[in-house]
Image 1: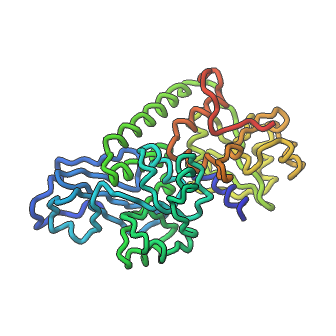
Image 2: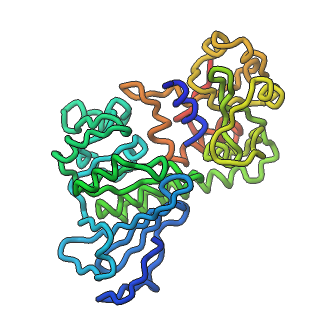
Image 3: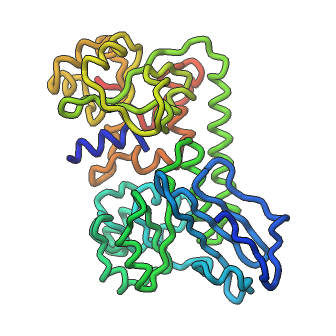
Amino acid sequence: MKLFINLLLSILLFSFMGCQNSKPPIKKNSTTNEVKHATGFSLKNYDDFSIVTVSNPWPNSNKTFTYVLHKKNSIIPDSLKQFQHIQIPIKNIVVTSTTHIPSLEMLDVTEKLIGFPNLNYISSEKVRARIEEKKIKELGSNQSLNTEALIDMQPEVIIGYGIDNSNPTLDNLQKSGLKVVLNGDWNEQSPLGKAEWIKLFGALFDKQTLANSLFKNIEHEYTTTLSLVKNSAQKPSILAGALYEDKWYLPQGESWGAQFLANAGGNYLLQQTKGTGSLALSFEEVIEKGLNADFWIGPGQFTSLADLAKASENYTKFKAYKTKNIYTFSAKKGKTGGVIYYELAPNRPDIVLKDLVKILHPDLLPNHTLYFFQKLN
């Protein structure tokens, strides 16, 4: 099952309520959304508070979540009292996904993290050091968070995420008086959209200026790299994914992973398919399309040519296998075995893109050294 989850992961990755009758009035017309690329949340700053609206925390969500962030003794309009209030900067936090960890590290607030489910999943060296010092509490699993421990800890904020419209564990925590903020980074489909969720953490820790600066740099690096391949005449063909049992899983054409391949100047062979999830094809369907693909990117959990051949002789039939043009992100792991890519890549799409451009068009980035990806030997 773990291999299956890893494979899928590899393929993959309020409206502001009117301020009628509010006192004092909110300067709505003078406030702009600080979020440019992410589609699942907005952040608007007012004189005495900020409003975060999470509108798309999971696919087909029918709920919108509003959070009012304010400093001590701020005056909040009556019209906003129905929403969850959070005093900033928060002094401690519990997060529930490894994709939340890089934002804490980039904002230099890892010492604020006091709890996490499945501590072994975390790869960040800085956070692992605090785990070994017993400063971060194990909270079980996301499916069954240790609610008793959380109530005892009384974190100022729990960053949770939902899979669908039913999240009983998070609902129960809120009923117990704990403040839960939903993070929908995983549901974003654009590389820069996922990374922009660092602004949510910046707002919670009253570090918006730093968060904006960090994201702006990522955005600049990403778009600069994008411009390098814009006029490239060569578009190497790309195969992706691998077999699990009798199905070959690979990204759909509109997915996060497929966008990277296209933005890196590649011709992903399933680019024309619709959808943002994954495809499950037979081996025969894949070999028909990908037999002569120039590159094979992200072959599941496999990290060597020998492992691929041992798993199935069919893998050796592909041109990319014969020319050894297969690259994986599964080889680079943290101290407890977590794949670094899963934790860090959503926050650093600029590095992912540079890696892929280096693989597909090495002459365009001669000085870049692969960070996430490794060639199979």
